[in-house]
Length: 160
Image 1 (cartoon, helix red, strand yellow):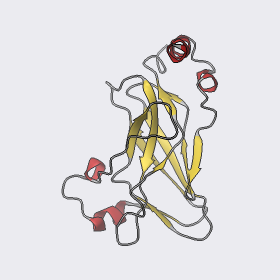
Image 2 (image 1 turned 45 degrees about the horizontal axis):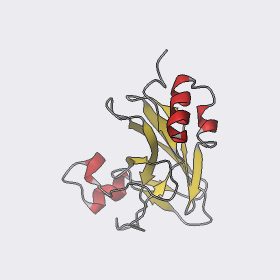
Image 3 (image 1 turned 90 degrees about the vertical axis):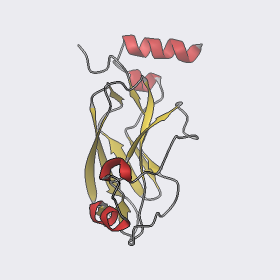
Image 4 (image 1 turned 60 degrees about the vertical axis):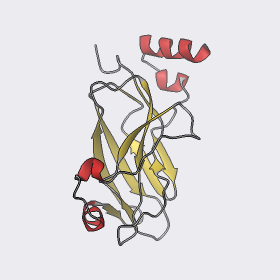
């Protein structure tokens, strides 16, 4: 009941909603990769701008552009919906070689950007962007993705 009231209040008063929901940062670092979204609230149809930075020590990282995913959450940092699917952005004939060619290859300290559009029918929810890391030959470093900070999609966020 309390969450419903908080979400209702946030939808009505957008200023400071991120703080009310406990979303206090647009960046998150995991396994030496920092993922930053450009803001904490979006509306269906908006584009999420993602900055990816290799914040690790000395290893090059390869971020798979083909499988990047907008993923809904229940607001929890423990449980994420994620499905590794390289055909998502690269088509059904994608190969590991194509994935490595299209990957964002970042030396320590380097950054790259990507954009994902939120579908017009996306429901109001908490979300993250998931990315997977690749080995030089195109194999996955881990079955688990690296995830951005949680952001919200609010039906009224982009409207006047």
